Image 1 (cartoon, rainbow, N blue to C red):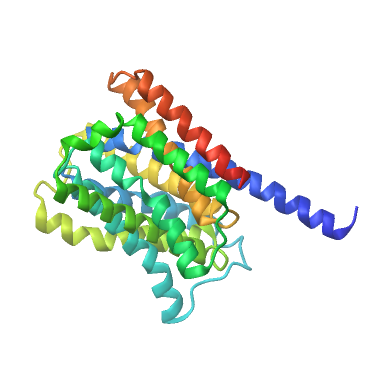
Image 2: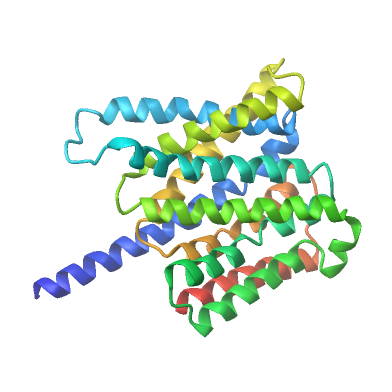
Length: 300
């Protein structure tokens, strides 16, 4: 076997592993609406604890591996540090805007519009980085977005919202697109752990003043409240976002953002299992269409 063939095989194996990590990460983050719904503190406060508590396992991970990784690049200088903070700012904007939109418009509208991020990622990739976008990928993107609309109740789902709240949800989608694109640019330079530490820590710093100014009841008062926040932080953020950040080193951001549409499918399944929210034929069809769209986009 030639060296070129060996390199190609290794790259394909890494991409398959990255795709598996991306799907698992998306499914894990799909659990977040359940934790947010059951949280006993305010929306912005929940967003803060989500990233602040996630720093605990990340710091443990960092301490456990500090002596074993000698070749990993560390941020050096103001330019590197600012580049690592940008995704944290974008993540903070996404979480804050989405949580605010949940109180201004219908839950269906907020979820639908916030999941339009793949559109903005694809447009930005083409406009800013001249990334080639194939017709097959665009067909898969359209199919997956149609699936999300069907999953959330069809076009009629948009009629129960508020225009201002809908606009805030779209702002959340734009912020999440910025988060994906800025992370993808960093992953060729820094490890998953370095990106997670800086992104998560800076997001906590950006969200904290908003939570303190706009909400009361900062400290959770019950063990159940802490359990929900720890689940949100450790399961959905530290694990889910970690898997996604790992995958971004090997997969294009446009396809990665599209695959994250698995999140609303997972959320619907968990809402059925945990909250007793029934899954009807429309939800089942919508979930199948989302998965079909991702499959089509992958072939492109």
